[in-house]
Amino acid sequence: MSFFRKLFNRGTGKPEEDAAPPPAAAETVLAPQPEPEPEPAPASAGAEPDQERSRGWFSRLSEGLSKSSRSITGSITSIFTKKKLDKATLQDLEDVLLQADLGLPMAERIVKEVSTGRYDKEIDPEEVKRILAAEVSKVLKPVEVPFNFGSQKPFIVLVVGVNGAGKTTTIGKLGSIARAEGHKVMFAACDTFRAAAIEQLNVWGGRIGAKVMSRPTGADASGLAFDAIAQAKEDGTDILFIDTAGRLQNKQYLMDELDKIVRVIKKQDETAPHAVLLVLDATTGQNAMAQAEIFTKVAGVTGLIMTKLDGTARGGILVAIAEKFRIPVHAIGVGEGIEDLQPFDAEGFARAIAGLEER
Figure 1 (cartoon, helix red, strand yellow):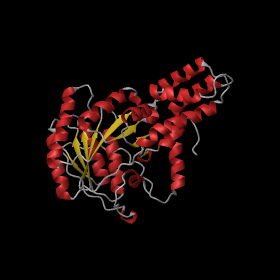
Figure 2: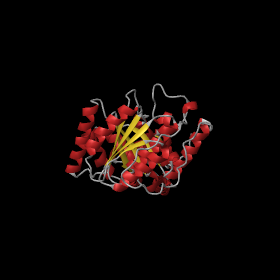
Figure 3: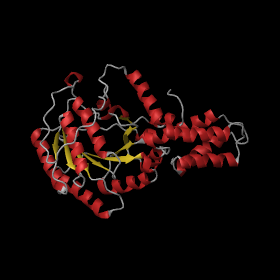
Figure 4: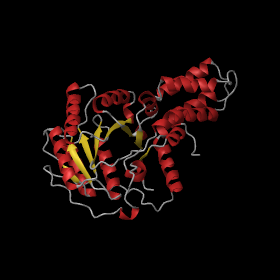
């Protein structure tokens, strides 16, 4: 089973042998295209056994989360090596977990579990790590939800988030994987504030054979979204990804514009958008909590994709968000390549952040 079919579970997917259609020509764009970046590595083509692919991903996940796991496990080792469990060591443990952005409720639960039946006794740091992994997995397992893309055609995916979170790149990666599976894809470049974002989507569109709807910088984003849906219907597009401008959640006028885009989309299809993906940058730490809250209120977020987990020692923020908001986590990114964006695996994430080996 390929990555895209694991991430986007459609009831009647196209067979593997149909997975390499000739690329369609991308729509002529108004802005000049820059030289494309090097071709990203393709998604696994199915020749590699699932077990080997799983091991390879866990290795990348562990490496990507190494900053977070080293921060946590190094401190756990120093706290608990040859020391009896007492109030001071438990407080030190809670501090470490809070510094990793796991959140207070999670930290308190882990501390309680560690202390139960072990107070005033020595405890192996490895046992603490196992408890950490088990408690994190309990919180994450309910939000480990594949991205189900349904029978609507086109299936409209609205992608939101703040500047720099990686929305446009994530859209390009998902579109590339979708095209490799044989789906007809269209991009709507509704980040009309940034010429670079428009150009980036056009590069991706030209590379993978996806039509790109774009307008000059400063054009009305909601009008473009409306026209893109109409064009997607006419063209028989399977999946329409709508990029949006990166907006700070505390800038009300930008959030109002996002609200307008959602309302305009519903004029074309009252059931749309069929999915609203919030792309979060793990390096923003606690600020990602505020982003999850406000974007859910404004745009009705249906799922999360967290990027740049390889760039932070505070990867625990995903756990805190999952516990507070219960929003499905569809995928995570631990690098720049397509292969570094993978379906979310709660147990794998929990063991990687605790510095444990794969089961």
